[in-house]
Structures are given as structure tokens and as C-alpha cells.
Length: 352
Image (tube, rainbow, N blue to C red; front, side, top):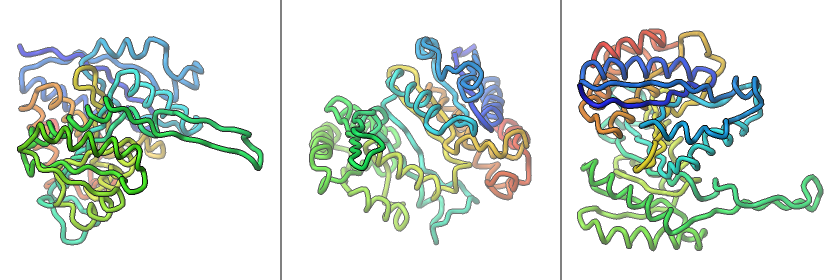
């Protein structure tokens, strides 16, 4: 028997448990086929737990998750909980506590998936965004003075350390080498306005690049990146950027690859515990209706297997997703797929 992987499963809120169940279904099928085993542990972190206990995360949450090889997450976001409470209290908290300093977002258009970009196909839309995940504007530095008065002042600071910037950039170069497509890394920034933060990013970028003579380097302002992702997505291979810009351009990437129903991502600590999730959110209006598209969650499971070194299983899952998308589904939209959530998971599992 091959390796045994301890996986923490966090279904979370809304349709999260439904899509996570389909991801687990596919993982179990892959384990049977490719000779490894899974030890799955469920964690009830999410809105229902918060409403029941008043606690967003228990104090030992990070330590418990560190006992696992990876975390498989469904979605966080509950309609009865104020926006930001769960997202900051669970997602950001765990990213920082587990030092998941890379947010990895493949932007890949699968065959037979509609994109809003005219005359673009799968050969044109195939790149990856490497987003710094624990610093920048999301570090939480800043404060408010005289709140609620006409003299109110709000300050939000972007924190960028040499260590944090360099390790993110180095990951991007390593990933471009491993990906072995165009072997190009594009730095996305705003050097003409954010002269302090992106002076650090730019200097670190070109210094690290000297260690990778086989990798081509490019730079573009974030506004230009947004334009070119729409006009010429085929130009990109690996894009590396800070937390805020990465958050924005990855959602644009999700739209050009066919929507949130197919977009998956990973929060990566290369030397620790990483967390993998679909991008689309909890979609509470579809909860319990068996209509939500589970392919993004299954794609997150595929990324998790690739990260853990089960490359053959990961490739088989990806190939099965492509087959189901190209030959079976009417649409990627909830309720319009032509099949229910569980049926889509069955088809991916059966066609590994």
C-alpha cells in the first residue's frame, strides 16, 4: 500500500459541505485506483458553529490542523453572520497561523467551457497567479481616529517584508520552472505610484531572477495586467504579485476561465500544512438543492493531490474534469448543468 494522507475536511457554510462531499468522493476513488490511503477528519468550523457557541475558532484550531498533511475546505460565509467575522476569523486567521504565504490560482480554460473573451480558447487561457498571502494590506495594520465624527481618520497600511516578498517571488520562479510552459514570470505591481512597497518588490524580483537564468522576466502595472488578461491572456505564464492586487486579478481570472464554478485555489505553505478550496463562496441560496457545481471543489482536491506528490492521481482527476466538462455538462451554472451535484461527482469519480 502507498502513503497514508491525513486530511482535515472543513465543509464550512452553505453549499460548502455539498461540494466538499463530492471532492471527497473523487479523492476516495483516486486513492483506490492509485494505491494510497486517506485518513479524513471533519472539522465543523463555520457559521453554524459560531452561532451555536459564539466562538469563531477554538484556541487550538491551528495546532489541530498542523497534525494533518493538508486541509480541504468547502466555503466560509453564513447569511446570519455579519460579513467579515468568519472570513477574517477563520480564513485569514488560519492563513497567518499556518503561514500559508502563497495563494496559488491556476487560470485554465477547459474545452467546451464558455469564456466571455471573444476568439479565445483553451490554448490562450492557461496561466497561474502566485499571490503573496500573509502580508500587504491584509496584514491588518492601521487604525481609526475619531470614528463617527466629521474628523474621522482611517489608516490601512500595507506591510511588505523582504522575507515575505522574496519567498513569494522565489516560489513563482520555481513554479514557472516546474510548469515548464513559457517559463516566464511577470511581476504585477504599481511601481510608478506605490514607490515604497513596489520598490522592494521590484528589487527582490530582479535579484531572485539572477538565480533563474532559464526563466524570462517581465513587469507590468496592475491596470495593464487587467487589460491584457482580457485582451491577450495568452501572453501570461506565471504572474506574481502582492496580496491586494492578487485578490483582484484572480477573480478576473476566474471569470475568463468560465466562472466561479470551475475556479479552484490553494493556500500554500511549502514546508507546512496547506489548504485547498473552491473560489466561489458558500452560495447559501442553493444549499440543499443538489444543483451547485462541485467541479471547483474537485479541482481543489486535484490541486491538493498534486501538492502532496500524487501527480498521477492529480492528472487523472484533471483529465476526468475535462472529460465531464467537455462531453457531459450543458453549463457550469448552478441548476443548468443537466445533472445534479452528486451526479457530477459520480461522473468524475467513475471516469478517472
